[in-house]
Length: 353
Image (cartoon, rainbow, N blue to C red):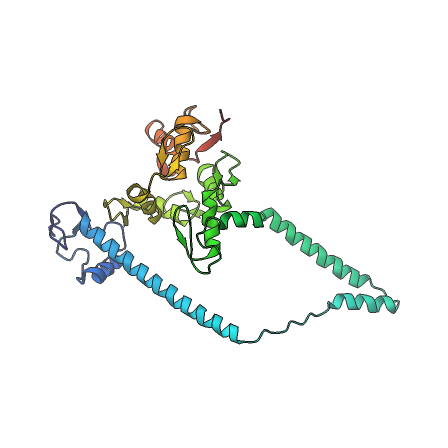
């Protein structure tokens, strides 16, 4: 029997956690060998616990290794693109030769000779019909994107410190640096009022993908990714991973390097870091309150000033201001666990000035 009262790496007796709790033992032991230089295996006769600080060091080391590998790939790719662009500049441009369509020539020869041109007409009409069907399918499945006008482009580029300079662009308002122009335009949209409005609750989003994810998460739209252990279906793979780690495995592989709090997904760490480093720059227009993001401002408006949307329980008439409150209500009052709950309905209310 192994003594689990001390840490395997620093021999500390405080804040101990099991080493092989949530990950595959083979991958976990290989990661520990890579970081510590010691081969640690399950049930090897030694202590099978590790303190919280050592776990954070291992996680940060693996994160730094993965980030270094990704940075090396990006640098190699950028050098290859630079050399290819120089080669293309040295080559003379090719002359483009336009070819006439054969269908039109066949129609002219058939009419001049007095022949029957019904086959040619049928061919052209069939081609037009097939094009129409394709267009209708595309219009039915994927809505057309709005083209960016010159006025909007100038409005977004006005936020850049040097809009005409090639390379990375820096924002005047938040000083964030974007490596390409298209990325900067997408970032600049976040500083203006969102245009994509949810038809169920009226919440607005910067792009359509965020609006679709919101509709799938809160309003019960189609969910594609199914859980292997229960009937739960998720919107995307990060949500499915979050569900499996929260409900089934209990694994929390990501941690904050400031306070040590652990999380199930990487996005939750980035959202948590706002508490440590984000500044209170978002002003409420109805009171002197300041917030770190527009999402915090939206929840403040809904709870304090204008209740613009509400969440309903599908088992009783109760209504709440947040969807998580409804989920906790279903667990405590009705005994419905999180993994078996139906989508929470969000109802848009009339705004009161």
